[in-house]
Length: 296
Image 1: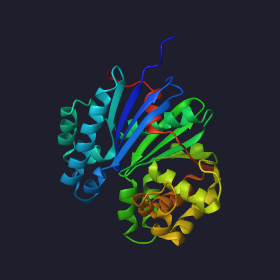
Image 2: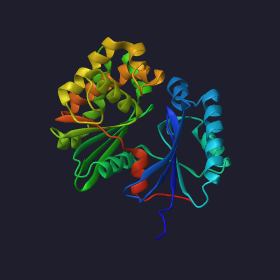
Image 3: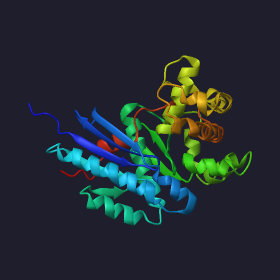
Image 4: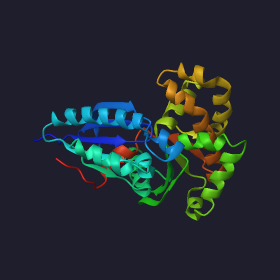
């Protein structure tokens, strides 16, 4: 019997860049190697619309190392994707050209592509899932409607955790108002009212680790909608320093949790889910199970 081919995904996000190598069948992947660096490509994009020189240099250094590692995996299938920060940056094309110069076949995902892939990742990990998938990155928030038939409507919105920080700086209530204005035209969101809200992304996972630690409860379990909304106050009361002391929550993530919890509170209020669950699977797993451009 022949073994399943190894597949590798490099996910170039607004906060971090991650390489994961998978073995096993496509519908039940097993992570064999997982490596990431925090390049903060979205930092400069949020400030002045460009990837700053420091972040670009750090990203390309890491990607050069990832490319060298992948050359050791003879016969592995590789997919390299870039998301919101590169999509929105005025110098995004320059960055993509530099990545391709390293021999990496990078593709730029649209916001809808990103939302759809994350949604398929959730479906693969949660059979029978119904509701809304919310994938939070540094530069954008992707929403997708899912049910037993697959993935429905998708949208990408400028509410990444880096952008949320700027919106909240404008004053109390600004985030909820801005989110409501963005969601009001999306009448399809009403189809998922009273169902589950699935959360994808590193900031959500860190928030869930904080909740589990504070409550001495399991992580990655559904929590009632009102409990999810209450996390905003609990995170604020604990503060970044104490949050960073929680195992699995880095100082960088701890600094983002106030903004992530505020966005979650606003999302729950606007979408009206019955409960909320953080998914351990998302974009990368979705790219594995959906047709895509894997190269050899």
